[in-house]
Image 1 (cartoon, rainbow, N blue to C red):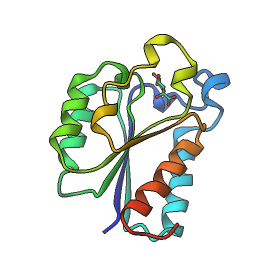
Image 2: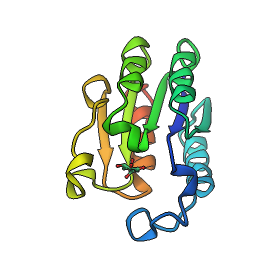
Image 3: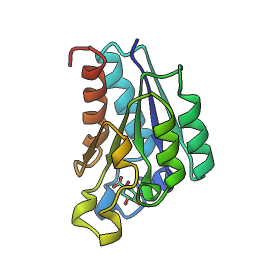
Amino acid sequence: MKRILVLNGPNLNMLGTREPEIYGSTTLDDINDMLRARAAQLDVDEIAFMQSNIEGELVTAIQNARNRYDFILLNAGAFTHYSIALRDAIASVDVPVIELHISNVHAREEFRHQSVIAPVVMGQVLGFGVDSYLAALDIAVRKLGGVV
Ligand code: DQA
């Protein structure tokens, strides 16, 4: 099965108007529409979307993904850099996670260079703007045995 959960963390609901020089002008709804369309092309069985500004809700979403989804695409926003709770949630489920970022966090402030979730995810896609989401979806489908 190819069931994919797309999880977005804090402030990603502000995409489109939030610091457009860094994050572009595409809204999260636009991104989700693009992912839905691409998922249909790739014969994905299910693609679901969730965004939360609340750390605990993201932890619960990751826990609930167990036995429910086959891959998680996660833009954890600022939680990437300091949430041990998110890291532990990812480590506690056997669902593979792709960490993704719109911006190239390594080209930005020092505090964005560290990802506390990096050691427990399958891999990272970052710096490609909204294409980071599409690339992560393609990778997930390939890992699940689909043809891209
Ligand atoms: C981000 C990068 C993070 O450092 C930042 O806190 C975000 C967005 C990105 O997608 O580039 O909220 O995850």
